[in-house]
Picture 1 (tube, rainbow, N blue to C red):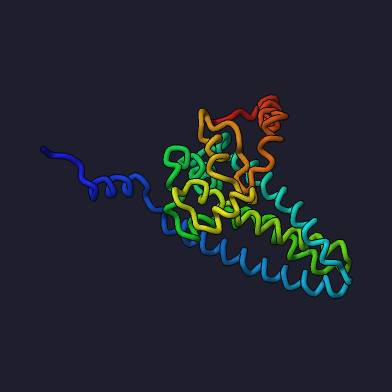
Picture 2 (cartoon, helix red, strand yellow):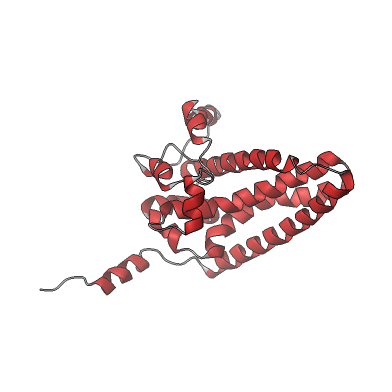
Length: 239
C-alpha cells in the first residue's frame, strides 16, 4: 500500500513554512547589528557614569526589575497590536510584525525553526525606537538620573531581545537546560503559561517575556478596554 513516509512528512512540513525573502533577511541582520552596537555604547557610558557619579550597585536590581516589567508589557502590547490590527499588507510593519504573529497562530512550532537573526530581527527593530534616542541624548547629560535612565534603557532593550528567545523556548519540546531553569524560576514565560494564549481565540495572555503582567492586564480587561477606545475612534480590529 502507498503512503507518506517519514521523509515525505518532513518535506511537507518544511514546505509549509517558506523562508523569509532575502530583503527581510538583510533587514534582520541590519537591525540586530544596530542593536548590538547601540547596546555596547550605552553599556560603556553606564559603566563610566556609575563611577563618575558614585552610584551604588544596589540600583541595578531595582532598575532591572522595572525594565523587565516594561519589557513584558511591551511584548504584550506589540503582540496584541500585531494580532488584532493591521494586515500583512500594512507598509513596513505588515510583513515584519503582523505576518509573523498571524502565521505563528497557524504554525506555533515555526518559531523553533528560526535562526538567531530571523527570531530576533523584529524585536531588535522594536528596541531601536528606544535605543536610538537614548543613545543620542542621554550620554550628553552629565547627571546621575541620566545614567540610571541609560541603565533602564539598556536592560529594557535586553529584555526585549530576551522576548523572542523566551517565546521560542515556550514552544520547544525540549528547551535548553538554562531555559528550563529560567522557566522553573519564573524568570521567563513557561510553556504551560503561554499555552493559554494559544487556547481558543488567542485573546488573552499576550505578554511573552516573563508573563508576569498577564494576570493583571487580563484581570482588569486592559486590552479589551483599549479596543473599545479605538473602536470609539473608528479604528476596529482586523482579526
